[in-house]
Image (tube, rainbow, N blue to C red; front, side, top):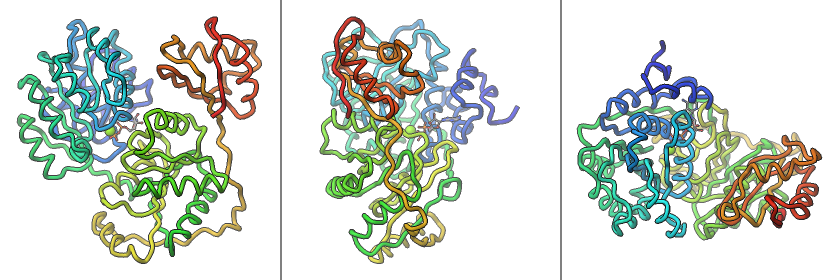
Amino acid sequence: MSKKNFLSLGLPNGFVDNLTSLGYCEMTAIQAESLPKILAGEDVIAKSKTGSGKTAAFGLGLLASLEVKNFCIQAIVLCPTRELADQVSKEIRRLARSTHNVKVLTLCGGKSIGPQIGSLEHGAHIIVGTPGRIEDHIKKGRLTANRLKVLVLDEADRMLEMGFQPALETIIGSLPQERQTLLFSATYPKEIESMAQKITHKPHLVEVDIDHSDGIIKENLFEVTDDQHRLYVISLLILKHNPNSVVVFCNTKRETQMIADHLKSQGFSTLALHGDLDQKQRDEALVQFDNKSITVIVATDVAARGLDIEALDLVINYQIARDLDVHVHRVGRTGRAGNEGMACTLVSSEEDYKLKLLEQHLGKRLTVDMLPEQMNFDRKPRLPDKVCLKIDGGKKQKLRPGDILGALTADNDIESDAIGKINIFDFSAYVAVNRAVVTKALDKINQGKIKGRQFRAKKL
Ligand code: ADP
Ligand code: MG
């Protein structure tokens, strides 16, 4: 049996079949290196790039040691952002499909506290959330984890960058000393090292450096003269590569909005994602990008952390990121887990020094590519395949994805193939449908009933 086969781990029954059904046939490098130690109950500090499969590494670890019958909090996973916490919860639930009745609870800020208190009273096995909100629940005595077995810090570097150190200290101070601690990070600055020393016990350091930029991800550099030229080159690259999903990264909120407005005016299906948006606007942007009804997202680094795009076709860096680790991280967002991807970075002669630093950082020389010529691919911005409809009802109205799918495909005049992702929030739901059936779909919802109730739908 190969070293990378999940069977070699001796996981509980059903785990491997479930992994196979998820398309996880072999362990990724970080999983192969860390899982044997994690499953042996040891503390692990793991460092590897984005997209290397860290979530499943700790997810399988905490699920393998979980005693479902023992209904108490056995694991806490701390994440820097709400979006990441949502992704991690989702992944843990998928990994847990072969075990019955595993209760995962997500606790993040930006959400009202009442329902969370209720859920905590009902209890859970695994808590996933952001440090601020979890600290709050602990301080108010609503969350006690005195039988905790595993603590996970995911993207520990980001949590420290975002100022969560005090919250982390309070949380960790309230947990049993005797526990397994797993710390995951894409980078390993001094601050992490000193924190790791305090909170782990005889940790194993596992480091896997897959250099994305040398593998399936191509990082292309293009020389630009000024900001006007940057905008032109962005349009040109999107037209040339004609991607389903592209993220344009910027260093500031102002640039983000400006570029998004520009691309929109050129006819590209575009949204901006930055810290000035309220939670609802962010959720809507993420949903639309994820369900393929928006092609281009222009984002700052912090805002983009919520994007979970398995096959992001194209990443464009408006400039090299201020922090070179962040830059490498951006590039790593395309081509996740074996998908092909492409990253394009725009540089002007004033940024030569930064380019030199980036070369030093990567330990290799980068060459500047020729700009594509537009006449070779005379295209217009493409419309996304899907259109997103918003329905004015959600979980609180007991709407489930199946209800919406059922309502749309009743009478068979819309095929279920024409329906894309369905996302349900507390008071609203979003469904992506093929462009060709938009009118029919709107009519069905607006004129019909779902679960005996009338709902309003509109095109976003
Ligand atoms: P990281 O946390 O290291 O950035 P993720 O845990 O988000 O990476 O995983 C990146 C992607 O790889 C996800 O889409 C996940 O479903 C996929 N993935 C993880 N493990 C495997 C595996 N063993 N085989 C195939 N795909 C995997
Ligand atoms: Mg991760």
